[in-house]
Amino acid sequence: MNIIINSDDFGISASANQAIAALHKKGVISSATLLVDLPYAKDAAELAKKQNIPVGLHFNLTLGPLAKYKGRADFERQLALGRVSIRLLKEELARQYNKFLSFGLTPTHLDTHQHIHNWPLIFPVFARFAQKHKMPLRLVLEKPVFNRYAKLQDGDCRQLIRKLVFLIFGWLNLLTAKLLRVKTNRSLTSVLALWPRPAQLEIKHLRLLLQKSRNNTEYMCHPIVSAENTPTAITETSVREYDLMTNPEFFAMLNNRHNLISFGGL
Image (cartoon, rainbow, N blue to C red):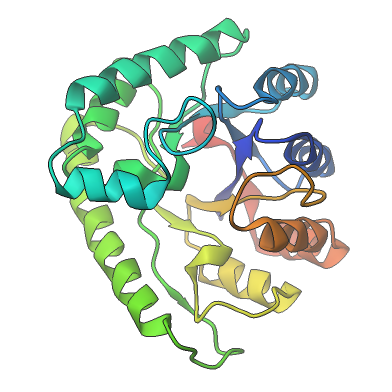
């Protein structure tokens, strides 16, 4: 069974770059996506060329000094108010794509930071861009994976509702991608798909995610070696994720029933 293990946030920090390079060398990840405007983007591009890491464009509007919005919540609020400009999206896509090319790389696929392209109002902008440049596009078809090892906590039901709404968006976007004949992964999974969220990520959780994966699923990860100077809200989870992905047991689980591919293998 084919699976894409893609690491987001390439270029966000030296720690993330180190983790991605190490995991690719170990044969644990098969792809990464680059934040072109973040401080360590050039270093990430050089690592990608040196190690021949397949790298896609991680389009971003919500993180870093050039961000157009103050985080995901601000973007979603502006979108709901009709204040997100399609023209701006198209201009930013072109600019970030061209900046990616300036690093001496060609993107293997397209996805977005915090899945902002999953909103059906704007998904066609990204689908048409992917179609124009003949590259696959991440489909955010992420089914919640029941975490039988955890008990329900306050806020879990609200989180589940959001997951189900985004799952509906994913199905709608799949129809758009098919109409435009844009290649996508079949589904998406990650530690963020676990519901309820685990208090402490363990190897059993990664096993559960792999067991629920289907052919051509993208397993999205965010590994970092340490939390130092990595500006995300999930740094502790990311450090733990890196530790678990370097565990020989995780590598054995992959080899047991999965064949790693990049988006180029779809």
